[in-house]
Length: 327
Ligand code: NDP
Image (cartoon, rainbow, N blue to C red; front, side, top):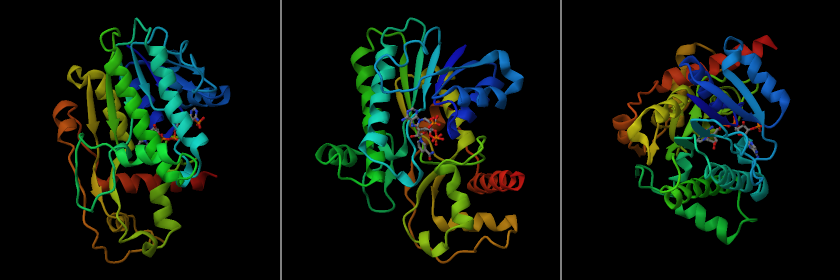
């Protein structure tokens, strides 16, 4: 089968592309420049006949994806801004996330080949303010962020704009699907992963793939430990969830909370101790309660299993240290 992956050069998307190629799929990736496309081709030399790229310079333009989706059996829409430390504003975060989604779904309206669309949403689209220890499921929506962005689009911190962007983009996906499902040949799956960690395939870390490294080498435990942490997932499992979402018939029309689990910042310091790197601090006491992250639906329907927190954070660090030593 032929699969379109948007934003194919991203941290998550590269793992998706790798797993698809290894499983025999033909992959077409969208990127913003020829240089990024050539970089991906060079990354997977063994699959040169099964991997191509198309340039979509501006995902917000109407019809931007018309050519890219032609002849595809499935579409995975991952492209969306993930700015470092959520730095940005309405125009740089919200507009591309939301308009990029509208644009690809408008293109998909006329497709005669696409059978399934998988939309990469986020746990933040579920994460309204709650007391620590809250029980999260697929029924949760971040109405708080959607309301705030309508009220004051130009006056919110970047992190809240990101929360609103992911929430509203996922709403657009579901609204579009529900409105058109009688006329289109595809169905929709949305995936809601929290912080994504694990080994990066790209040369420079993005925001989330750098988080564990920063925690280990650039921050003091007192900066983070004790603050509410949330939940996490390994990038390899997040990618696997995307591939399984193509393969499981019953996933069609479903929203999935996927996560390796809840964590506290101190857990990461604990897990990193076995690397025996003296620069990594041991940490301090942490009484923050865990949230309950109910991933039973993804287990039941997708059959997803998870890499442990320890393996994920250690692999994150190992890959980054190896990259730095090559420089
Ligand atoms: P990356 O930043 O590594 O990749 C993002 C991809 O989207 C890149 O290909 C990037 O292209 C593209 N992109 C970003 N902004 C634009 C824009 N304005 N126009 C066109 N393309 C754009 O992020 P991740 O791999 O971490 O994220 C992938 C997806 O997963 C996103 O939808 C994100 O919201 C979601 N997600 C990520 C989480 C995380 O912790 N990382 C957690 C939950 C969800 P370019 O390289 O050209 O900028």
